[in-house]
Structure formats: C-alpha cells, structure tokens
Length: 342
Image 1 (cartoon, rainbow, N blue to C red):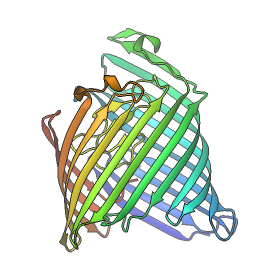
Image 2: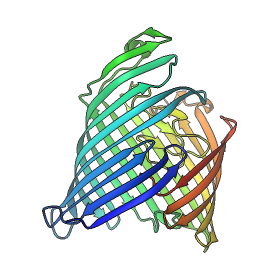
Image 3: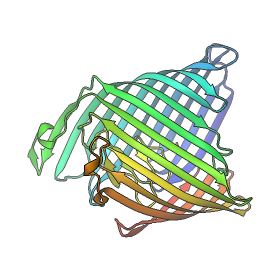
Image 4: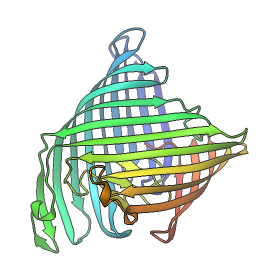
C-alpha cells in the first residue's frame, strides 16, 4: 500500500537542474516495516532505496537495508587550477542494525558493499580509468536536535562515521603518466585495506530573536591509506551531499582533495523577516596532515575562506544565493541552490 508520493524541483550550481520523485509506504509487507524509493532525474542523476524494519512496537531498534547511487562529473585541481575532469559512478549497499541512544540520537552497526567507476573526460598528466570494489564494516553515531532543516536557529547536528574498507578489488583498464602507460605503484597508489573516519559537528545558538551563531567542525581522516584521489576527501561547496565531502565557503566542490582534512567555521545568521535570512561565515581548514607526524604540520597546509549569502525558506525548499572568497584562489565564487539536496 502506497502511503505517499512526492515530487520536487532542485537546482544547484554543481549538479545543475534536477527533478526528484519519491514513493513511500509505512507498511511494507509487515506492520513494522517501512520502505521508500527516491530518484533524481537530471544532469547528474541519483537514486536511493531504503527498507526499515522495527524490531518492536516501541521502535527503539530497527534494521535498515539501504542502496544508493549517483553519477557525476567532477574536476580535479592542482594548486586550485582545474587540470582534469572525471566521470564517477558509485553504488553503496548497506545493511545496518540501529538502536536509540537518546531522544535525538542513535548508534548504527553496519556492513556493506561499495562500488566506484572512474573515467577521465580529458587528458591530464595522470589519468586513471577503471573500477574499484570493496566491502565495508562500520560503527556510526548520529545526533539531530536542530529545530528546522532549513535555516535552523537552535540545536545541534553531530554525525560520526567509522568505516573499515577491506577486500578491495581494483580493475583499471588504463593508467597513464604524462601520456605513457604506467602502473598504480609508479603513481604511489596502493589499493589496500584502510580505515576512514568522518566527523561533522554543527551547533546553532540564538543570540537574540533574530541573530543566531553557527559553529561547525569537520574531520575527514584515513588510516593506512595510499589511494591518491580515488577515495580521498574533497573540500568545497555549500551543502554536504557528495561522497566524502566537507563543505567550505570559498572553494568549489572538489577544489581541494586530500586524504586528511580538518575544517572549522564560524558564522552568523540574521532573520530579516518573511522567511528571509542573511548569513556571513568564515572558515579555515588544514589538509595533507597526519596526527602521527605533528612536526610536519605547517602553514602551507592551511586554506582560508569566507562567504555571504541571502536565503529564503520557500514552499519548494530553501533558496540560497552565496558569494564566497578564498585568498588562496583569489577569486569570488557565486553559488546558487534551490530546493532540498538529494
């Protein structure tokens, strides 16, 4: 029995125009089972399907089976200049056991399968084409107490993910270095087991009836990792919807790729009225560092940025126009988002 059908329009400076459709049911064969499927049709399509089964009527614990995928094109940068462009397709299937740890939080114990394909759209000094596959096992924790998903004024969002990637099976049909055939070893890339940790902490604190302080801390960290950009973190963009993305005002998506990134931001949101908001934010990030080698950390591995935006909480979802700048890139970036990101 179908309980809900929904459709939405979205636009984003990175993904372009898209139309999404969602179908959901609160009783999927069993009383305590829910299911949903969402598809994004556009320049960079995506899909997500989810089945959730609650183990009791109290719904304190549940099993989830989630499958999601996305197809995108993204640039690779060197010293903040685009040198290449890749097509990426990824698929992730995950089975998890989840249990509440508080009124607004839960733990998740999961195992899954990950697939990624990479294909260059243009020649560059280094080109890689092929596929990687891996199994994953992880423990995650999430806390959500924001009073609104669009332009919140109080509460916290905390997401902690720890995943072990193992039994990787690479299959690369083409590897080139300066136009000549090469190998992963010559590129200092080794496809081995590794551990990946992601942390996102956001807090909204009201200063008065109209002004809200926003603080954010993000960490992306890999252990035993030697895979170049294949499974690295990317820093940039305004909304966290891409695989291994850390948001950063002043940089485009994928403008900085690193195996380890630590980023912090401080912003202020002002409620002008009639669902209109103005926001100013400043952020800084440390990249290409290791906690095990603190002496190698230097100011050369720091990047700074800031942004100003005007937003409107519309009936089709949030609309936001952002202008940001980074002294490392020495350029102003215009960014537009309409609707809920997929």
